[in-house]
Image (tube, rainbow, N blue to C red; front, side, top):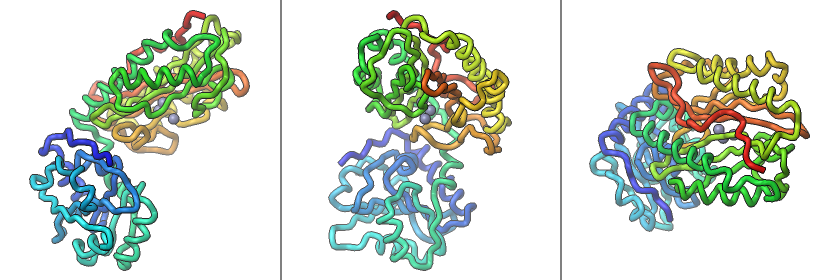
Length: 380
Ligand code: ZN
Ligand code: ZN
Ligand code: ZN
């Protein structure tokens, strides 16, 4: 099994534990039940895998008589040996096949009225918790923990900065791979290898949207052969060893673009992306940042071709809060990190997107991706 090693100092974890317990109390839940995934990694500095055997961090709300516990199958406990459970005051409760781990959690909590479970906890565990804790109302832990996870500390921002620099080095090498006569899949495989070479643990996603495929925002790769004159959307990212993710898009032209409208339309997109970066800062709402990009695109007549939100938060997950979207009146704060990635997608023809990760500072939004934003014209 794979448990990522802890790389966060005990003091930070201690602080996260305390704040999570307080946030749980403020949300009116008696305990958080955190299964393997990004929330567990955030709280414990280590992650594991969710499967039919229950692994669960039981984190009682502040003021509760119950103590924090890590319920883990005995055969998997060695993977968590690096977690500073003693320092964190976490009781380790191992269990073996044949025992009922959900009952074990119920015994530890002594009659909770409500529990918040990880957003991505498998249903086989949430339903087993319903049986083991019939009087406890279940809600999602995500809305509780996002109050912590949205506000990145210096170590987290350093990890995001490292991820940003690593993915920038991949974009800087695009001429090595992106050429006419090669398929998107061939180019994508080379990019994926480079994502790892440049310091990521894995290539989490690789989008090479050439020609008309660029007009499909979440196109992956295909066997389409890249042609001279194609506009190509390349959106790539993955985690660095600290667990924090990169995510950056640049749009390339393979030689002189094959459509007359590319240069002028791309200029609109570039202005929109810059407008959103300029608009972002402490005290500004997420939806105002979305509007800053959208207004530029709509004013130029392309509103209907910008078919997604302007951005998403990023951290241990590629997509997390805060979402930069119409209707989100969340006020941005120093330490929040998110993408600014407007796009213009012209069905059947071509598409373009520019994506940077930014972090909010007192002085405004600072880009963690610094590759040029101009349409990059590659040799053909
Ligand atoms: Zn996306
Ligand atoms: Zn993104
Ligand atoms: Zn992206």
